[in-house]
Length: 230
Image (cartoon, rainbow, N blue to C red):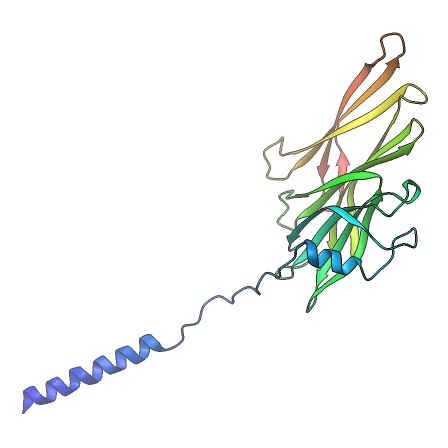
């Protein structure tokens, strides 16, 4: 009789243990599914609007990056392309910000010039990823370069760093071009901006650019923007 009771008790304990194992366990909340973005979606979005020249967009060289650029858990996208239907005067290259709210929506234009590029930068401030955009444009020997580092929040962009240069070797025979490097040079975990500026003069006899000076500038992030320290 006792052995029978022991067997019943063991069976009951086994059932209880299995029920506990099957009970849903609490854990960290899962992130929302990453939305899908591809060239066809981008083409469709811009087919619904006209460009600065008041004609339909004709996109090529499409590039995009997804990330939590504004708030944790919310996915946005940075998209760039060339528009073959725009004339030189309005600029061929554009960079746009897209947001995802029950589908992809066009948020804001971030850049518009003849040519350019962008990349995502982590400056080590424990904040959202930043976007570096650079481009150039000009006409008849007069060319300008520009680059800017921005962050996105609440529907607007904040400029953390801005630089400009020119290459007028086709007109004045001189240029002031820049090269940008993102690097933590002092080991504090925050990325500095190292800007190298090269001034050139065009030698019409040798038919080549001659470097007249080369300067290096260092900018450090102060929590709001980059300021020069050298």
